[in-house]
Amino acid sequence: MFYESTRGDGKLITSAEAIQQGISPDGGLFVPEEKPIIKLDVINLLVEKSYSERCAEILKHYLSDFTNDEIIQCVNSAYNIHSFDHPDIAPLANLDRGLSVLELWHGPTCAFKDMALQILPRLLVKSMEKTGEAGNILILVATSGDTGKAALEGFKDVPHTAIVVFYPEQGVSEVQKLQMITQEGDNVGVFAVRGNFDDAQSGVKEIFGDIATADIISRYNFKFSSANSINWGRLVPQVAYYFSAYAELIKQGRIQLGEKINFVVPTGNFGNILAGYYAREMGLPVNKLICASNANDVLDEFIKTGVYNRMREFKKTLSPSMDILISSNLERLLFELTGHDAEPVRKWMSKLKQSGSYEVEGAIRERIRGIFWSNFATDKETMQTIRNAYQRYNYVIDTHTAVGLNVYAKYLAATADPSYTVIVSTASPFKFNASVARALLGEEKTFGRSEFDLLGMLSEFSQMPVPTGLRELDQRPVLHRQVVEKNNMKQAVLSFIKNK
Ligand SMILES: *Cc1c(COP(=O)(O)O)cnc(C)c1O
Image (cartoon, rainbow, N blue to C red; front, side):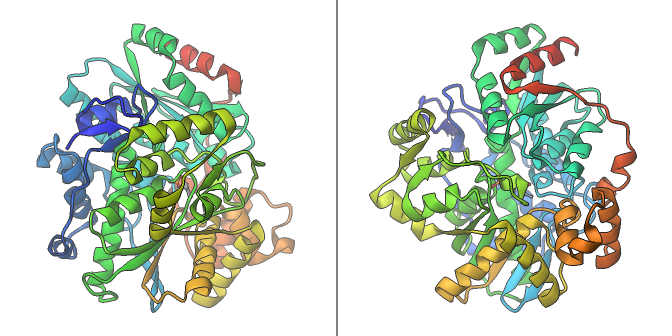
């Protein structure tokens, strides 16, 4: 299997090269040249397998330049009970006859980013061995909160790598911020940016595209790569949990082999749901992929109208990991839907950059509507959904998952589709405990309480233990205090690397 750029520079590279480079030199994203097909009898074989084995089965098709042993080593060291607090790794919680929740937050940082970022560093180190890379890799990350911590945990003290994370100073929760600024490890840098997530992401993209900066860091024997979902090595492990969820539903006798199901995906950068799209293209029986946005409803509008317009107010919501106006991974979907024709993709992306919007027409818009359904939830609806889920199912969900559940209710009301549905749950309720506690315990009891008081109160109320990664966060020493202007991110990277 070879990989090509969505901007069409014509080069074909191996998966190891794609993972090592992160983003294509022409500014595009790497996509597999073709999509492997997984037949129903192979899906059936996944039913009795562990999460690691299911994941290895999917990865081997995409990482064809890796040996089976290498893949097995990577999955086994990523997905095990030392890093995950549930033996199934990605368990299902069954809420109703036709409704389950796929819990993707049992990893060390309590959000679904761990599903990819526990394995990406291992894939990267193997990729460097394969390409004969003798130097070191510098990972740059822009984060809306969850990626940063998950990447830091994945990469800390990994040989031949260093990692620098930028997060929006005002754009992350207290817990998320403390998770990052207390990060240990000799190869890590963490910077707050004066700006929002899109500023941080644009800044990182610009550094990636800057030859002069690449030249300077090369003198220190470093090359750039990315741990954002623009890196194929981040995306491909996510395809696995769609297959795993399906196999698990068969195992539990909740669906029949071949039965089509829906997935509802709380969406920001379009990485998670794009992995669902690849799973569907590979033959996983999926009816609709339901894209759930928060009040930053740019994707909802795009799916409904074909117009992508980021020229709108950036809203800070209770589901901050989805506060995004530029969804990078959409570029991959567009490239797939044009049948790998880079020319229109280049045109749309340059329009987006120049005027802030573009429009896809005709057949492409129809194909998008055939695969996806979308809607959005306001903060008020999010809070109400957290309460409803608790009352109805005795189940505690975080704000992002609540956006998903709310949008699913809208989908049911609009379509009455009886298909079995899986809500993809992207964070532990404890990670966004302030909002969850407010929703469940009420304003009065929670008013004026710190996020750490609320962790305890939520634990007591829900009878669930506070996850290990979030305990005693407020007592750890702060190791990273630097704040940079959005125009000074490059200098921050250079001073970090000079001190390595
Ligand atoms: C990152 C994140 C999302 C959005 O996922 P994308 O792949 O960017 O669409 C949703 N929920 C949580 C909790 C996240 O951390």
